[in-house]
Image (tube, rainbow, N blue to C red; front, side, top):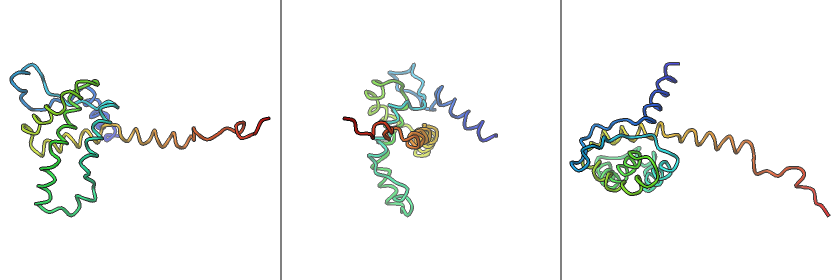
Length: 154
């Protein structure tokens, strides 16, 4: 019971936006950086960026220090861009600003902060909901023909 309440609380917080403890750039002094739960479109853009990295659980099992540094060097900017997508709502703002804000996040956040934000976004992003919807629709067999369609008519 308690776990379900905690999960719902985190989901509600992400819907409202979770403040990121970073001082905004001087030109945008009025902006309060927040991370929001991704919309479906932003989730697709984030997923594309994560898939571009090519990182999987199998690759990370037996990673040494040099390999870990190499992975961090190659993919930190891409992951920061994925986080930047969730800092804006809508269609155009994430598309226009994710590169600049991703670079800015990379300069301001530690690896621990990046990992924490990424874990929160991926855990509560709705991918489980998408998978369960897909399984439900597959079980319904929407595309299977009706019996009347199988009969040949003259």
